Picture 1: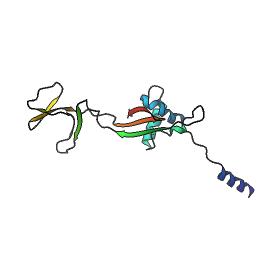
Picture 2: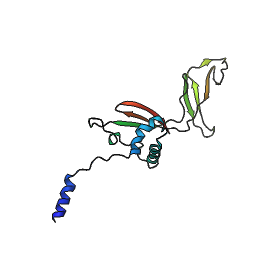
Picture 3: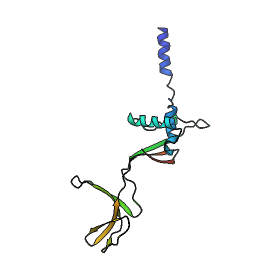
Picture 4: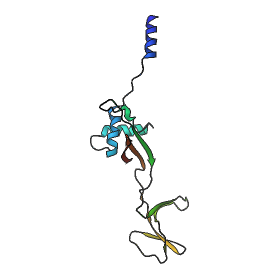
Length: 161
């Protein structure tokens, strides 16, 4: 009975220490903004594993770092999906999803010129009444998912996967 009481008291009053993440998981914070360069194979493997298992892609940064005075760093991230590369200045992305027509994605000029339209190299011309505008096919990303990262309020960058 005495052993049971000691065990019960130790379970009540002893708190769990904060669990640190693995070295590979913590290395994601360093390797991801650089695109997982040489020496980051373990971090890249952990990153893919976390995505596959539908876990947060990055561990809590405070479980990975401690400053010189014992303070914790704060990091956060934002996930997103961007199917197409941004259009050039003066053009806007327009996507038409029409099953019968096959759909398309174009970067269309902001300004609409009155007819007649003059040919511009690398651009197509579309007519709408007495107006025309220029467009070119939008370029689709091979890796459309992205993550944006911040540490202590400082933006680290955006990485696509």
